[in-house]
Image (tube, rainbow, N blue to C red; front, side, top):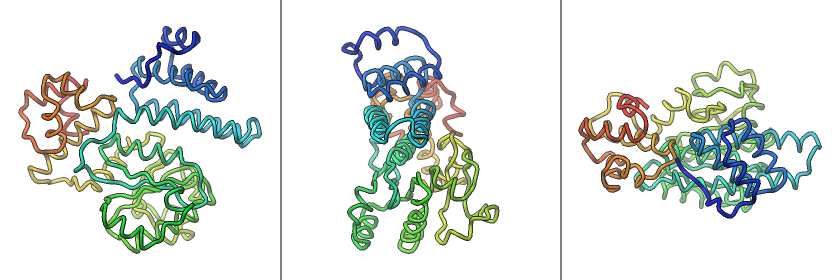
Length: 338
């Protein structure tokens, strides 16, 4: 279990609220009220309570953050709150996400790298930040580039080409919140595909699902399904994958796509199998919100030992796998098949 803040100095409401077992729906409702009040301490209390009650970090992102931000965004759209109130709420959630991020930041410099960005004319960074954090939970290193980096100040194309050639990402993820930004997403994808055809591109966000008139709860390989969408003629530059599922990277289709992008293919060599096992352990660990040191303590091994396992550089015995599985509250089968 992870915690994000010491609550000893919070106000009396927070202390009283923390001492009561509440459902995730109740916690989410109170979290929304805290955001509307601009109350960071109470919002933090709600998140810590969700974690203390057994929710993992990914569940907090999906159920608490996503639900409340969508509802608050709708309140602004309906004229119930001002844009200032909406921005303040988003700022609080982004602050809490930054504190949670220390629980799943990727320590392995050899982990595959993804770029997460948003297109021009889209100032909604919270969806992109969630996109980036979910990728980190799946074992990716992430370079997070919002429009402040790419679009507002217009990094020259040749400079950006040099940057990508230097960092060599395997994946570029574009988060699209608005319909207007979808047009720019198409242009940005064209730039990537023209210059880096081997790098996979994934789209996500409500701007994608609305523009393509697709179900908000679906993930799929785009090229295998493009004939299903009448709006397809409006797209000149096609992504490799679309992730619009509320399951947030948990669908079979998305997991398979990310694994292929990591070069974890079926019929892999022994070294690739060790790498896959190590990555699966990392994903399970991150989902639990625990560090490599925490897992090492639970499994009674050294942190460096866990690091070599997650890097795919350690041949594991069944007894060690069993200890790690128990420490992660799972079984060996899940470590192989996650």
